[in-house]
Length: 335
Image 1 (cartoon, rainbow, N blue to C red):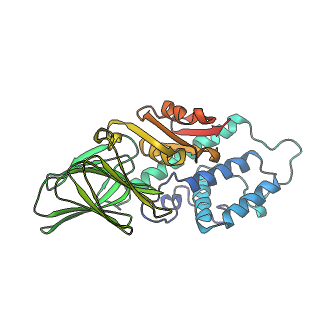
Image 2 (image 1 turned 45 degrees about the vertical axis):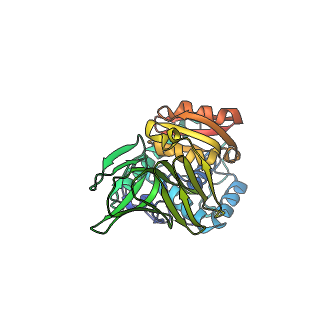
Image 3 (image 1 turned 180 degrees about the vertical axis):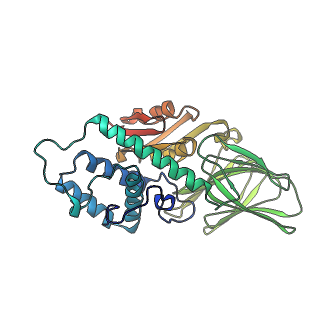
């Protein structure tokens, strides 16, 4: 694979921070986490040829892996901390241990964190949505028809309002709609599925692995590839975007879009899925270096206004621990 050292980058080439990717692709996704973990391991032991070979194999396993690797390398390169990470740039075996002192590793991680934050800011500021919310607390706004919109951190929507229709497209993240009655239909599209209402309060959540619609009051109609579903107050429709399976269950109205109050309510959900939601509220970088934790399932209530404490409560019962490497980097390790 090509190293950034093979293709010189300008000192602050903002476009080089992020590879082109499908709209809605999060900066802090599981594949980027994996690529970052490979970089950290190579940084700690640059003379380990077996480690280099395993990293090369991971990159070549899928185009998405190669893209995540390039993104991680470019950001690392802009931090001025890129080590030799390809076979053509391996250093000669050192006489002493090659592992960096913990202090140096943390220093380079801080430099990386600064670039990652810059990349995230640039990503959010790109003109790709009418309304966008940076990671952090929920944002509230009034739409031109008098309807109310709440966006979770990291969410983005496009609006298409005219004299005949009120149509929105959720590009990523979670949104809650309090719809004002109007002769025009109100529709929300997300990941190819469509929700239609006339007057109601409901939420739509679009994640990398799921799509969810929940009704706080009123009713909605969900048209999906799996068919049509009518939902009433306290009902939730959920699509697994990997398997294509859907399900409808009951959810107390008070728990719908609880993120508006900095709460995360988990009901038999995987830690990996919940981390995706944590990242919407944390204005920094959450790195999972214990992939075995991702599939563990949990039920609980977490206070998103204190991400560090909430993450500890999430992973500690399953043998994980959280380290704060800086005010903007939280790393989850296994015991």
